[in-house]
Image 1 (cartoon, rainbow, N blue to C red):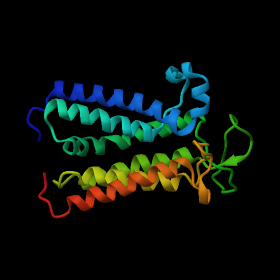
Image 2 (image 1 turned 30 degrees about the vertical axis):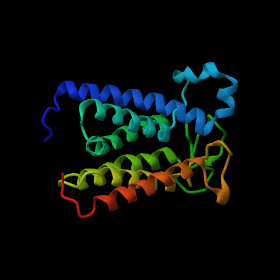
Image 3 (image 1 turned 90 degrees about the vertical axis):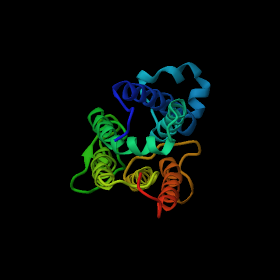
Image 4 (image 1 turned 30 degrees about the horizontal axis):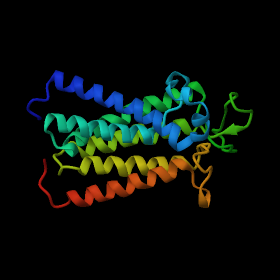
Length: 218
């Protein structure tokens, strides 16, 4: 439905997107979660093969990369983001499955019947929070966006729904996920760094959807 969006265009788009994810995700991990460690060991910042990527940082990296790409192709940035948004949840789902298989980003201790033990950390039964996030951020968000974007929508509406959906699901998932320390450890009222970073996403999504109301479909 977009004239000129051929295979070469999509290849370039993918290159920009991957670059944004890697650079933004790594810088997000460094700045949001472990600044003390990485500033003491600056060479480790480049050691992406050792793990440590932040989704919120990756999102910011993609937003910037897509802004540069859109400007270079004379395309409206939000039109590009609306196209990309429904394609993100499958990648998130695969990432959460990878977290589960690798036994990382485990959940908080619990006594629910479906609790699991992650021997990499201890012998306590814990929430399999990676699978919860797989279901919410991956499957549920994909179905929601696919259904919503099946009809033409005003520019920014699909992006807004993605931000609301991911931010809300991530905020809920953090209640069962073992919290990352973040810059200041756990924040006030028992909220985690992931929850604080998700709140602006929800607010931005609400603003985008309200902005799109009453406007003609793209």
